[in-house]
Length: 343
Image 1 (cartoon, rainbow, N blue to C red):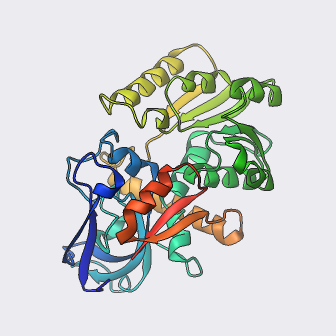
Image 2 (image 1 turned 90 degrees about the vertical axis):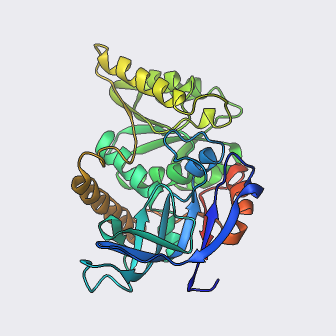
């Protein structure tokens, strides 16, 4: 790629991966308080898989540039940005816009990537790491000696979640297909095959008194089973509706149903709690607090990586221009970790 040329991926509508378009143009100029990041790594998350189907609950109108997060080097700064920012490697959580060679963001929305962490490694830890850390430590508030269930323990968020939990002294039961079980056992996870086993019955065998937390990205009717697995004082954290990815109809309805269940469960006279986790919660009302929390938590995740508590699980690396192949691979269900896009 020409470093002075903008290359970005356009999602024009509800298309197959091959319908994604490459557009070339002029590198953006930063405004006051902004920086331009030359992308070194971005990735394919479950959000983009939903977006190309028109199923992400608050995606913008087509056409737009997808890309939930990115890592890169600051190559230009706007008025009011400190002189030491240019040339630093940073990470940014953007929701859309990351699938581009150059991305303009507010400087306050960037987090410096510590030396010694590669761009692709850091990319696997941005949205996945923030989500895992905040669910584990801010929502469920796990403690050493507790037992939790992680659905999709081999996935992008799940793989970070089980490692952070293990580092915190928490016992983990993880659902995944059989081909991922050996890798999960190496991480101290007790695996359950969601394809061939009665997941609820098996987890009850492993934890007869219930578990302290369940992390569920699947949604749908299975969320009721997740709630039923909790011990008194336990916490359910719902953070997606993967089971409805290919459904038709309203993209908001699956989330509204989850929110409704959470409200009803929390209104019941019991000691269990339920949350629907949204990494963007609170940003509109308290932007400075949101940014400070994101910076603090991502810094914790990077520190966990440097200690060896968390590994960067890169499923594959492909150039941005092969985004269709990357999307197909991410959607195949055959890989563990994150598919990373590079310039």
